[in-house]
Length: 312
Image (cartoon, rainbow, N blue to C red; front, side, top):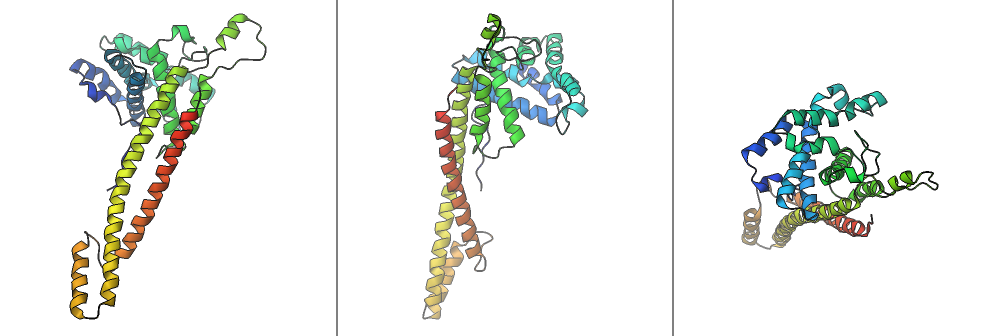
């Protein structure tokens, strides 16, 4: 038995009982490579949860989530030598990679069943301050679905790159998103239009704040998973400590009958794979695991405190 958790498990699209037409759209991501497919699933689930915290209605939440599933579909047309390259891309390769937005948009527009969800492909790399691509749009021209997917996409990209196994240290990732959400205003601005443009960061602060709530939910879920495992460990430790106490009494027993009594009791309490030779070693393993999980739980509670103090 062991604790199980992931960053995207609390809510997923299956809860909306999608009809066959929508399953066609979602089936398109099966054509992507494994890494991109998982990324698309993660971004979609995270988009769904962000929509809930943004109090977006069910119909638009479903629409945004399907857009998010399809946001990287244009990577079907990016050479694998670039898409799966280990290491940073050259400037030329990066320009090719950026075309996945327009290629995905064209693919969606050419397919009547995908056309309604083309926004995810074309807007998910646009930034509120106009520094994004492919069109360099600013806040007023980027639809809310694009803004939400941008936050979900950036978060998952950082999480995947850092290969988190737990939410401990996740605030470092959130701080990076805060930097992208804060305005960068130069000390002197020659043109008013430039000044107006720099009053906005890349990401929508309201969506980033919603992300904080989603991450806190995930941390609480992780804590509950680990707590469940610590309860199991605690039960096992108490059982093995009881066996250990019986063994002490067995060794102190004056008669063979008493020794046999304690021996039989110990044997009855052993679980599969345990015996007189290894139970002490197993007990120490459980104790070590228990203390480690308690430390993780304490660190996760500290992480929540840090996140609650973050401001964007």
